Every structure is written in C-alpha cells, then in structure tokens.
Length: 389
Image (cartoon, rainbow, N blue to C red; front, side, top):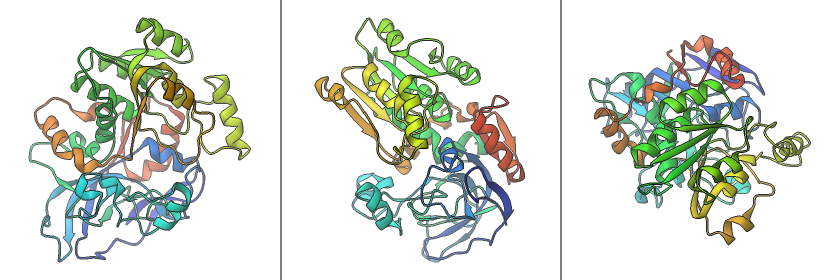
C-alpha cells in the first residue's frame, strides 16, 4: 500500500510499504477514506520527537471502512464506517475503566522507554514514535487498529467524512481544553494558538458557556478564522499580550488560559522565546515554553491553566512562584478521546458544530510530503490538511 513515511528531519515520503495484517483477535483493518496532518505531526517533521525510526508510517487522525475483523472482535463488522481515536486503549485496565483511556497500562509495548523519560508510560499512539509503541499510523491506504472493539466509533448515516474525521483527535482535544477550564457564566477564556486545536477550543469554549474568548496568534488566516468563530483576537507581534489581557479584564486576568501551542512557540515573539530557541539549538533545553509562561501570568488568581499543546521533555524557567502564590490550577493530558466521543458525535448530529470548518486543503497521499512543508511554513493560507487515499 501507499503511505507517508518518516526518514529524518524534514524528510517525509510517499512510498509503498507492506499491507497491515490482523495480529490479534481484537484487531480490525480499515481502508482509509480520509486522514489528516496534525500540528503534532509537525513536531515529528521538525525532528524534535525522539524515538522515530526511518520508514515509520505517520498519522493519527484517521477514519475509513472496516475490511477485516479479528475473530475476538464482536463490536465491528466488515463494511462499518468508523473514526479511529489517536489513543490506543485496552478498555480493561485501571485507567481505561476510569475513563482515562490515554493512560492505558497495556497498549505501549515500549513502556520502559517512556518511563525512563517521563517516570511512567502513557498508552500507545498511532504513528507517533517508538516511545509510544511504534504503531504504524493512518496516513496510508490501510490501517491496522489494535483493540478495535474499544477505540473506533461507528459513523451514523448522513454524516460526511469531513464532518466526523476530527473526532479522531483535534475536536476532542480542543473540547477537552475548554472542558478543563470549568467554564462558568460570564467567564473570559484566553487561548494561545489559533491552529486547528485552538480553533476547536474557541468554539468549544462557547459551546460550554464562555461569555468571551480571546484568541492569540499572528497568522492572518488563523486570526480571521478565530474571529469567524466569535473570538476577540490579539496579534502577539503587534501588541503586548499581558498588557492587553489585563486591560480587557480590568486588571484581573482571564478566568482560564489555554495553551494550544506547546513546545514550538514562535521563536521571535519575545526575549524569552528567543532565548528558548538558542537553548534548544545548543541542546541546553528540550522545549520552548514561552506560551506557558505567558498563560500563567495572564491567568487570574485561582484560575485554571489548561495545557493541550505538546511538550516532550523538561521546561525551563516556568513561573511556579506565580502559580502557587496565586492559587492556579493546572489541567493537562493526552486526550482520552473515547471519553468524549459520544458527547461530541451527538453535538455534530444536532448541528451544534461542524468541525469541517477548519479544512483549507484537500489532497491525495502523493501530495502529502509537500503539504507537510506548506502546513509547517503556514503558506497558502494553510490551517488544516485532509488527505484522501
């Protein structure tokens, strides 16, 4: 089959790889009808995610049609149309039974590697390094889905691929970001990053009752899309974000702040972000946490900082003195997608949201390598890429 594979920093190829096969009775094989390039994939493209091996198949936002089912899988049948969560979960362990599916104890065969870096291991993820299981991803013509009686959700008739594809990752992640904020009537939510997850967080915050959303970015197309979703926008290259948020909130700060950027914050936004970039270039640091620092400072006393941007290692000079003295709550996670799926599918069916609004580019797998570059460089108004094998 054709698939997008990783061969080093900035080197993504569309090439032929072996077809996936049933390896366990709970598996399923799906024929991919739509997949997407995620902002998290750009961290792999940029060479900052450890544990990648040449030839690894990428992608964790996938849906398609079931074409083969393992003997123990009674949930799915051939012909079912499904969306596949990016988190791989057994459904039976301590964490899965409590709804913390992304913390699954059984699905990362490389758990010892992850535990060495992070102290313990989360569950396995599709297409996201051998720290997280080395599972082949879904930017391909076919995908093997382990524990397919737990993860995939069947798509009701009448919904298009583009309406439901983002149930795999960015819609649940953006919704979780807002859900973590414990939004109350009248709340102001500040969101750093107007990429796909930031856009979903904006609309989710309004769905959950926020009165005002302040969205922070500098890319004109992203800011325009945020405005279309009802947000007030701030360009971090044009104004001081802390000063403006204090002005807008009469000196109190935002009720909750969402970091939807993570480890690769813009390196030219401020003096500390420039220093972060120097440190990572000299291997003196692993991440660039400028946005997290700013979110902490901009959050009101006893507010919440919700973190859904990806961080990989150790953060330098995070203002914990500010956080503890002002009573901030931190919420963060790899999204336990399965926990949110029924609620979010219901919202789509009711017409409360159509996640396809974020798509700007549609293409084939063969166009994937070039579109990785386009997405990374934010050229051609690119916000979200959907590939159709």
